Length: 551
Ligand code: HEM
Image (cartoon, rainbow, N blue to C red):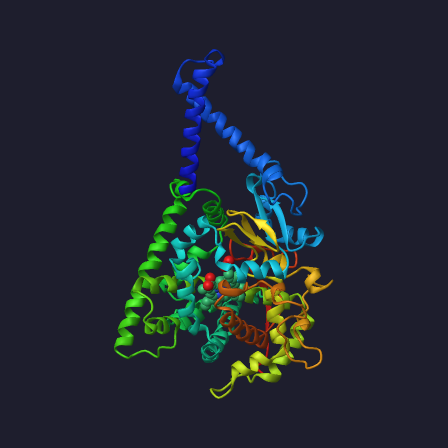
């Protein structure tokens, strides 16, 4: 907004000066003697010249980024800006990274031909994500918009505030704490299989003879429910019962705001591209709906914080969930606690739900791997593991289970593209990068680059995550650098919930594959990743399931 005001003021002053100069020095050539008309003409001329300079002169002849390797072509006015919105997201970037020789930094023209950069190798990524992380921030329009939904939690804040929050939230995601959560997550994973079984039984009753489709289940919808239930207990110590179709208002509000309808996706994209004071004033029903939902979420989370404080005071709480740990640390005000809660509820369920959905897709389309995984699961985990069974240790050591989860996270990163704005003049891989440059990190492309992952980079090969000599899981997938996979990013702004998400994924996949044989229901429907910031399959994930005997 401030940038826009400064620009408008500059245009007005320049136009006034031009109009005055023209009226004094060349009055005979002006079509009018009126200052107002001359001034309006000067405004039009200034905007035209300025736009022409920005779109055609600056990118090609002035920008210090113009010498960087870049893709050819692009739209005359939009550059390669539309590449950001193509599906699957990140495919154009993959093509450029693959085909254009570079030493870590590529340039492309975004909307209005504005020069942007893409980071392509571990050195560039480590500079931006680790060494100079606080010089690069999430773009302001994105933060302003997300703040409405997430508050000033860990995802939104920058600089010192971020360092403070990260330090005090970190203990909640320690290895020890995650290990304690495994039995609860497993219980929810089993409840997921029971919920699906109940849906199939109900459809069988209703279909009365026409039984061919009773066992086709849309899995993404179930995945959202189970991950919401898990984050409910882990985040708040609260049973949402989403798997049992609860009427919890928090669940309903999140379901509504996160459901990616075309209207909502357009609205979200416009929030990021256009100035928000314009989008927020449009007579569009969705504006009001978003206002109502975000105010509901804030109110409900405020009540949850107050309830939890009362429970802790009365010593009637087990104090294991994220909110309890944060309250007890005494580092956060009530407003900050509400913001953290909004952040964890939103960041902590759709992401994992999408990853789990892609695992089911890849296993359905690779039946031989599904069968091998089932054998591994049945060999290592009893049908009903008792309280003494060390789920965390067993699940984390299962080679194929970990291979399948890691390989899915590589091929289908939930956040396929993320963006930073450069807040100071700096360098990346010794290239000068001026302040204001937009930097693209593209997990979708990095994770699939043949240079890092070999000629089968685009294939589903869980075995690359298994050490050939020891047969144990490895953490690199055979790739030479950690930075060759960007699903959770790296450094101080990496995903704080990575270990938690992986624990969830292991439990959900083990329970699901143990209970069902899965087949992709309609191969004529292409499974396309879809969404604005996080992605899930565009048409959901319909699978044909066959219930298996308990083992
Ligand atoms: C498969 C599951 C998940 C994936 C792929 C994922 C991915 C990511 C990515 C890429 C970022 C960085 C975004 C950016 O800065 O542009 C991020 C940040 C974050 N994630 Fe996750 N996430 C997952 C699950 C979770 C879970 C389960 C939680 C919490 C329970 C969580 C909480 C967060 C938070 C709080 C941040 C902000 C961290 C910071 O800036 O310090 N995520 N996640």
